[in-house]
Image 1 (cartoon, rainbow, N blue to C red):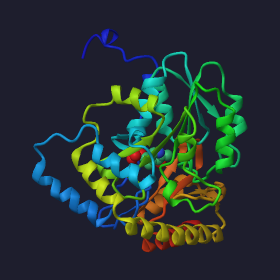
Image 2: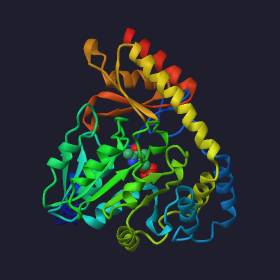
Image 3: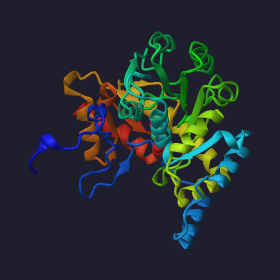
Image 4: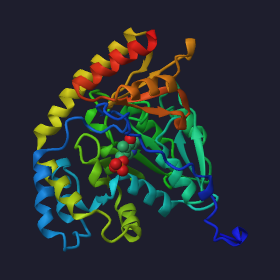
Length: 367
Ligand SMILES: *Cc1c(COP(=O)(O)O)cnc(C)c1O
């Protein structure tokens, strides 16, 4: 096509975005695939959610309930919070982008941490604002480093707790200290996508902090422990002024009817979630220990995934491990895009998958 100098130009910031690369899922022909690249649960969703999804096939001509009222009621009841402070999204990713879109403009700054979830950076740049990266300590968010970077232009702080891809978390006392150090007009966004998996007494997803303040938002998802990633549904708990702003900008039917029905049904099935927690506790611990026995460093994780580090000695690199594991059917996630070129992230899968990765890694290191 001619005349490229006359092409329409996207807004400033957009061409600085590195396109998000999702976890891959291809393995050689004939090799059984274990997808351990996107932190999905190996156990799948609740049978009740599957049934609700199947039932929806009889109503595909109807628009969804644009206000997601039934799902919001169920969430309000399950968490003991006010329905007016809940907003549902097409995955929590959509809510994170909408927050950036609503609160950031060119000249504004938004902070996220060194190995923080990449969706934050994309949202900040798409809004024409300036991403500010706070260094981490031992792959863990550092409250002082974040507070030191707050300026008069700061509008948003994105904190994944626990963080993906590191699996590390901040205790609630640290999150509170961060909040106390922020001016009232700065919104603190707590992305608690993996909250259900965390087994630590000093961890909280942040619900109380949202209730007790005017500038904290918690986002959650049905994509991880609930096993509904394909349907795209997440939600946020936020002060009413934030819900009101996002409500004006979101698509009128941003969450589809299948997602609404399946998510609501999933909330009603506690045992599927409990089983996923039990499975994760057992195999997170086992896999971490076994990989450490191979001489590799594993960042202690409270989520449903682990970060495995390679020192590159004898050509044993993360990229080498990735291709070897892929050839055996185990698809993990390289995390160079997160500033971790010598690491690979593994989702805790089935027992068979975890055992298979450990023995394949042993083969790789001995090859
Ligand atoms: C997976 C993930 C999400 C969830 O995204 P959805 O859009 O709800 O599927 C959000 N934040 C983090 C840190 C994640 O890893």
